[in-house]
Length: 148
View (cartoon, rainbow, N blue to C red):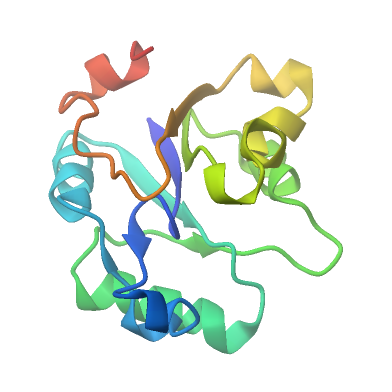
């Protein structure tokens, strides 16, 4: 099972209101690291998607994932001509976990909304509350694949 999960707002967040643009200082949201380690331990491939597009900011996000010992996995970012949906359509994960984008407009800003319908039907989309974490999601991959 390949799980594509957004970083900012879903797994990690700013430490304080003052540090929203200090990406290198981001911290895990609740027990995100443990949850992903559990899924990895059951055989899931974990890959990440960052909202950052500037190379040094993408590196900051990679650094946070490494510093807090998130399971290794590729970190994808958009190019200037690319939307998030382009990345999802190219990789077609089994599961896409992203936050609900509440602070920037909700459903219309979510990646899954813009994925080609023929590809979308092949992906288990799991929206989580922005900055709410993934701790409540099922511990088992079987439970995750049937989560609603």
